[in-house]
Length: 251
Image (cartoon, rainbow, N blue to C red; front, top):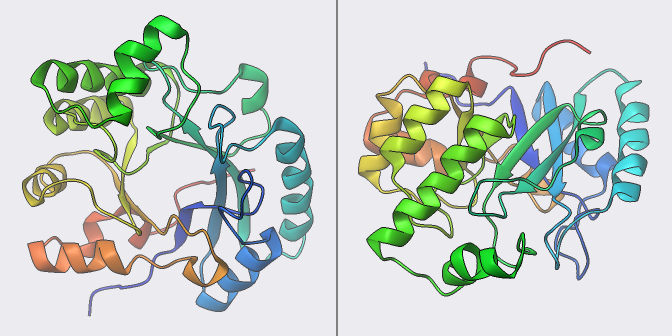
């Protein structure tokens, strides 16, 4: 029988993500649910600094690092500190400084609306057109170039929810991710790719990860949406990296 439980969930959120109750989990809640469900690793990846509604802060990140270190002393579930960084510019920059990376175990990155633009000029080329849902072919090329540049230059581990919020050429994204060792995510809240794009991804050499994107404790480890998609498209769950074992090793 095929394995139906992931070993690790590498995209979850806590109340350290911004304001207005965007995410409701406490780190200890994430740990408790992960332990109950038998997960071996969980990454807390709160929203990056340039998201002006839900972004975390560096002070919160340091506090979260301390909390996770204490939870890790219990030894049942390896708690990883990550971030869901924002790809915020037309040249593919993410909102991390080199000093930030020293705290982190894993970097997830993706496009999100409502992030501060690189500068006013870039806002009109990248941020604002995406906000209003531009689908023109020229825009698709521009956004694809931004995501590919992020994959190639920004040292990310996972590209979160591909095609969410931006038109992009998945053929180019898949090739760049495979070449640079970046995993592509099947997101537990939504799959924004077409069936054809998901099949293209599954038939390529790129690494794929299924994550919950949990914003509440009970959804930690919940990848029912990716599982249902894979079953419908006849993609074996063994094609998904975190159905086969943990993704982050070492200290």
